[in-house]
Image (cartoon, rainbow over all chains, first blue to last red; front, side):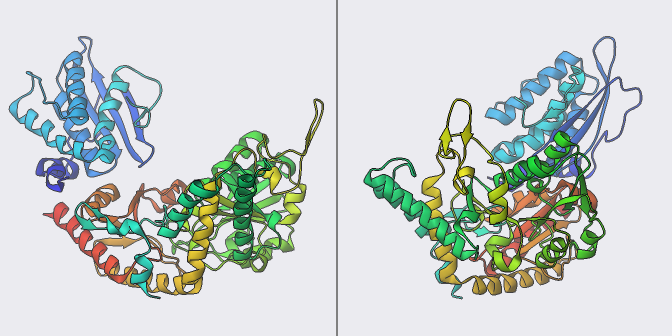
Length: 156
Length: 405
């Protein structure tokens, strides 16, 4: 375990100054996510246009540095992406935390790749993986208009 | 009290956590186990095990005797009047559910009031919520003050002629406040209202005397008392076990079963359905002996000293806010650090081998009132020392360094 890998500058920065932490204008989908064991909460606001492109995405919520940073990074990464691409990014992200697999997405800039990878240190802290995945699962709930809240205790 | 000799009885401290000595400050969650408890369970399975209360063979008799001896030991330890008042449950939560369910079934109806406090653990709220849903009962919350205490006047002013039961914690698992249980019980008795005490945090750290305290029900969690998991004890006054219905149905708790009727024996049998956690109950007898050998008064004195030192040390760090400031504090210190979420604190402390808990500690009502979603909590046990507090303070400084660089 290495704290330096977990609390990298990028994560601390996103945790302290989260991007897109607001209710974005014109959102047409939304979902709430909850980590019942530790109390982390996130609310995703998503504007998906007719061509199924993520025109805007934002979040509100409270939680630890990891969960806030992850939500912030997620919104930055998938904003402007086609939904199918966003879905792939999410799958890649979850796999990175699950088995350490490398990110394989062509559509990400080098910066975006580095930022996403900064969350890979969470893998060494199994109790904290749920903090990092909450916003991502909640994004899918919003996109697929699932009625129930995203819940890290039920998530795959 | 010779802390070194006490601590040496707990094998877990021989292990390194992340390469560091273990500083275990999560005792309100669960305590560690002395070797004699672990050995007792092992010996029971190796030499004495059989199911209890059913068969007539030698082992069944031995196992039954060991199990029932623990009941007698508990009875004596908490100064209950009779052994019928000692019911083994799977945990304190089950004890409180048992009371809510059986007392509720018989005595609580639509519009009746259940009086609990804002300090309660979910285990002393959710079971009453079920009753609220099922019977239309009303739950009232006695307010906790800024110090994190519930004053007797707050209880007094909520009592009405519809109040059917009062449920209070002995010692808050968040603010550490020790409630004036005896005074509350005295007040309740003048109105003939029974009192259930959640003794999860009280039992491991305070001297217990049921006859002196006078409460009607007292739920304990044995794994917080240096004992095995899977065992709880519900003390229930004889007058209640005699008139309340059984809780769960099954083997062992019946008197006679016919196709058209079933009769039940007295307590504790009628409340102990199915095969119980036999080895764990027997193992718990050694937890009590351990506490008796160290002496509960010595434990109380020691924990008070270390807790006071802890509060004093944490107060030196300006970024720390201690939650609550009770006049009478048990060995629990909950806190927040400006700009750092409790989960991040817990992870950073863990790297130094310092084990604390972060979260809402199953007290969401209280956290909402305090305007926080989570707190960090250091809770002490018999083996903690001033060095452990120093390790905590130093690890907290590391949090400040990581987050404020």
